[in-house]
Length: 139
Image (cartoon, rainbow, N blue to C red; front, side):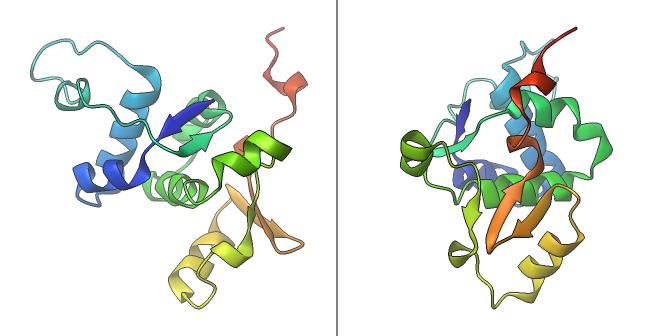
């Protein structure tokens, strides 16, 4: 599980999807910068921990090459709306659609066109949060 602060990531990235994903990846993987010109250098000493969470950030990062940075950032931003306390109590990785701005055409289009997200029974599900444990085992 990884805790992150989406608002802080968004602020530091100035809303640029590629930069936001770089910050998230840097926060998740904690790589050592090669030198001061390495793109991760400027984010390596900033704490991006927060109340937002991903249960399987490793699976998302392993499959990130399949998606655009925009799709990944929509995934992260919507995941950041979920309640950490709800997850702690009931292990709920979905988001009730009541928390999503259903009036926004942009958000609805992003969800509809995303292969990372799907809606079922008025709940928003996150593809890589629903990974069964047996799929995570190395063989």
